[in-house]
Amino acid sequence: MKLLLREKEVQKKVRQLARKISADLAGKEVLLVGVLKGAFIFMADLARSMESPVSYGSGTVSSGKVKITKDLETSLRGKDVLIVEDIIDTGVTLRYLFRRLKARRPRSLRSVALLDKPSRRKVPFRPDYVGFTVEDLFVVGYGLDCNEEFRNLRGIYVVK
Image (cartoon, rainbow, N blue to C red; front, side):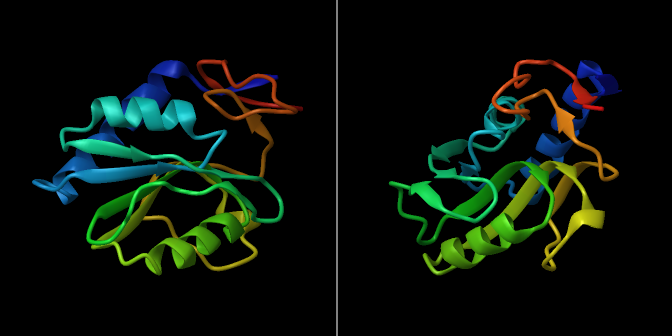
């Protein structure tokens, strides 16, 4: 594996994203919806860095074909919702989630991704907030895995 982003770079970017999101949603409580499993570390660090009050919705989406394995238990009606994703690849998952969650009538619906691979898009999708844009590389660490391994790495690494 080769180091792509050091822990300090990732943490600095998470704090920058948190400040920007907090400024954009100042005075509003933000409901964070993490796309599990990969986004859990990013979402925790983002939530701790945000100045806005946050609450959490929990659900899981499998990779590949979009399948909700656990839906949200919280109503989204009239809430400011932020979907938190570790990495956007094809855009299929987030496009699906946006359509599904928008039908629940939130006041606002936005997305944040730590990593974005726009070269891999199969459907048009542009996140509201992006930490890093990366090439078409297979990456692990900071919640991202390879066969459920390497999520605990503090930096982000390229698997060769």
